Length: 503
Image (cartoon, rainbow, N blue to C red; front, side, top):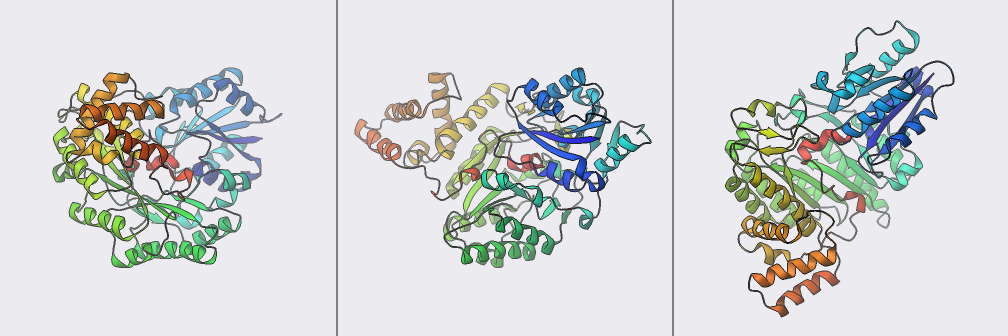
């Protein structure tokens, strides 16, 4: 017998935490279980060939696929081909993309079994039934959530190659107590912590093996301040003991919850050691209430301001366009407010309809129209028509190229002026008119177009050349010691939506 656990990662540098959890918890089946990761964009036939190379010579072969919003279409092709060339292989699916609204999905129809939700306990049970009987009668198996202490932590399954070359995802807790309707975490009852001492022992082991980049996927890292302080102290101790061999840690923060004790700890970190994801999503209280998001906007702004002025942390702050009830003027107001706080990066995200999320209840009253194909991006609302949403999509892409890239640090403030959203939107509209493209714009060409736009706005030739030369000759504004793998994906879903993508 052979059990193959597989997924298609968004890029090679991502190491699947979810697959490693499954492998770690296979118990008596662990020795028969292998992990095979691929990357989207690979040829379907090549993936199938590599999986078939590990098919058991006798007995049953089970192939489990982790299915996510970014790999659903390509994984469907892989499953379809596997079933054509090796129909005796047993296909089991799991992951957030197939855990909800599964009956209508082609990939579920092609597969033999589906595990929805938590798979740590349910997948091994299902595999035992497939291998040893009695054969499962039901196709869909609801994942059982075990006590957190019963889950075997997976971090020893990161290989030395993973540690040297890939992003290591870790989590001190699962779940989220908040109910933001655009996020799958809205379905969680609360946040469940792992035993802290056991978790830190695993982090100690990873560090001893050479790990220096830790990306926490906890939805709310600073929810329990005592736990947050102990984790931050772990990294401070490593920095103090090895100042010439620094660590880097990435966390998501609840924006309006930053007590003094946490500030004192954060302030001790040197540049290039901390990165925070902060989800603002909207500054409009009515929109926040509509999507069940609780947020003290004044406190959130105050905390971002403090982090920028009093800490060395790198800040990546998220806004979502297309939320029900929010028009362009409201979004623009929030965008301008966030720009004034001067975070290092602003993720201008477009709403996605993740399967299972409660956002769907607003479809009719707020005219929500979503793309039927992954990643299910909002196309129009009662407040924003399709052409305007297309303009916002282009704004988002150009914002990544010009602002978040850090390559136009001196030019950007001139582009934005005293009306950042309106001015950048005008530039975005003009840039699209000149290029008819949002991708594959070479840096040289982009710099030339930025200069041309500034001249059209009345800036002198010498001033344009001077500011662009300063940017073009310099390095990106991103701190030089920030690890390359800490850079966010330009095309990623808004982080409060995308958090489930790392499992």
